[in-house]
View (tube, rainbow, N blue to C red):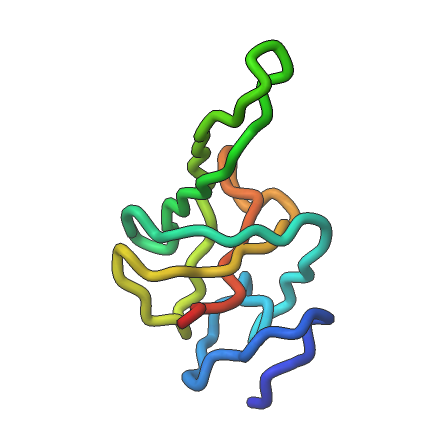
Length: 107
């Protein structure tokens, strides 16, 4: 089974899987936002990805640190551990909270 082109410039995983919600080997299409973050925790089929960013406070003319956690689907073909840097991309809702899927492990 060949990996399909998902429309963005990412390196596809080397392993193959039978996951229907994998953007490379299944039928899940990706769209919308692309975010970079760090894997905080992993459970069965889902990873929590934390994204840190700076937001400008106009009143104080300074930046503040903020972070947000995104639950993202973890395809079976990706071998990740907490602490890995990843790229996630928006997809259709897969559950009540999951609307992102991990598309790349960054080095």
